[in-house]
Length: 194
Length: 430
Image (cartoon, rainbow over all chains, first blue to last red; front, side, top):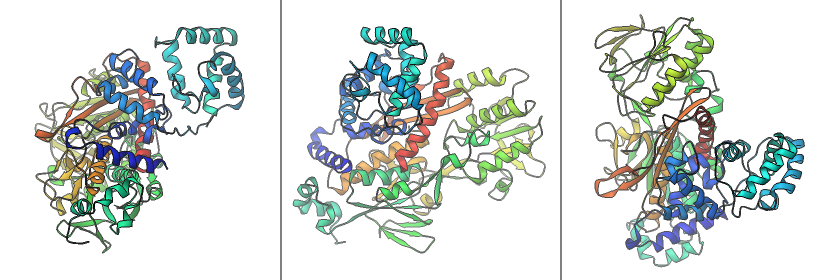
């Protein structure tokens, strides 16, 4: 079904893009360039690159623009994001938001995941709804690669990545009340949802 | 096939496009479109997969010489013993699941006028469009005394496989205190940072297992890919620039150009002096793969193409991708071939459906691993300068790992390199 809809999209795109509209690449053409690191249609099979399929459109756009401006630290995305206009980023955001993410098949600690579930419900569920599956307004956490989640939380804890004040407070509270292991428990919980 | 060409046919049969958007398979009109892909590497596999993904009504046949594909990317880690060759070996089953017909045979000729591909196995494959992605071949004549036969004992290890394992075995057998010489090729060649990552990986192995041993790079060039970052890493881990450096780089201006090899005495003759090695690895000068020459697709050493579509400027209907194509300013790299293949596949799908090819977008990303926890990268986003048929990097974007990257970021890059390997392979054949 996915292939069929994509094919239609390509066809329609080509039809709509008569000679007058030959200005820019289609959303598919732009998004295909990401696949070498983030997997076909944004479902990553590598442990450190996050899946970007199914990302909330606004989250994708905000983060790409943050990379572009150097507001979100990165090893490589800063250099790549600068290669696209804001409009192109929005095109890609729409494309990836429409893709179904393939959950990362990975090993996790069932005991930690159980503890993580309880922590999630207490500290995180209000914003990261549906056990971290709902992508609205944030990166979906459930099913994401654990090494990436580890790095992403480090960005918030040590690299000064911008975050809502509520998140900062809740994470601090969680660590204070449950110790440093809480983060690992949470990551195992998200990794367990495949 | 009627005498009307395919594009005219689509234009004439007005209902065809409407039918396609309604989801009717194209075969309903009695006209199967056939694409034959020559080459089972990154360019060929990616093109085959994406052709089927973008238009499942196209019949795609991929002809590969080997039953599986071994990635060259990260194969320097096999040489250092960090990973096995098996971890870089991938079958074509994924492509079969996408509906690609995979044939194991060797293509010996392409008859552009008859639109037929001929194989060593005596088979003929008719096509409407042909994609050729043969990779590189060596200019054996570039170093006197080095040829295919000598390479059975003095490896090039520039295609992942038995050659890679041979170099690994020779390093293992070498006594501590020995010297390895890598002969780097002149530009352009596939994987521009490869020889320097290889030196790094060998030094890493020596550091832990044969600390008195050295690696020397003899180079006809005076500069190389990611040079500043390699030098920074070598200084940090391998004493580069000191008397005890494990790595020595001899530039072209410094006498690094090798003219001949005496295999018996393991001696290389440079422009100024002779160099003796305990293990020698020669990476010869390069040109497009054999089939590109046999099919008359080359001008000089490489295949000129329209960079909007990768269609050969010499033979319409044939598209050349990856290392064999003249795709400046994209480098000859796996990621570049993967990116080009998608541009090409989209162009073929558009053309076969009676549309003009769309505007391309291309990316290259490449990681090199200098030490266990020290990775570096280069990235670029490209657009087409159609008037000059040139692929240009978007200004202000791309570039190298910053020189002031933290050790933590270098460590992350090692993880990203692994993800890049997995995702690139998945995107080409998974």
